[in-house]
Image (cartoon, rainbow, N blue to C red):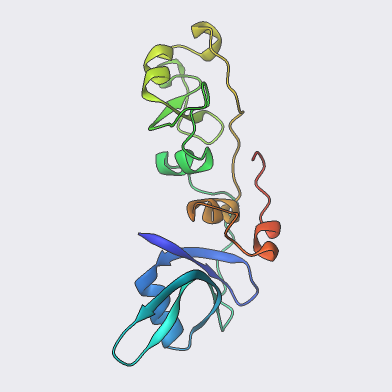
Length: 170
């Protein structure tokens, strides 16, 4: 489970890592805790520290430029906050706005989160053909947006970080 955001030394989001990996990076002196989860601590025989939510690397890591966030079903559900794009209820599936059988592709702009009932009702049709309308338009998150959204609640992040990542459609 990836629950800790890793920032580069320049404060730009790099990745999400498991709690175990985050603790190892901090204990090795390769990272510092920028924000901890309130009221939670990691304890071992010789160490006690707050549970990190955001860590920052001590040294700058050069990363190849990523222009786009890679598409995934999980990413679509996270981007849409597990809410159905047709009715607003809890979404468990991903729907293609233009069905794959009609030439639609797996892309950020052609997929939305949907509840199983609406996905089945829409079936192999476009929303117009099925008489359904989208409550929110699909959008392509930036790589940094995708990392922050993967953590879940943006509200729990520090103001300086939440403000740095502007999600196109909230």
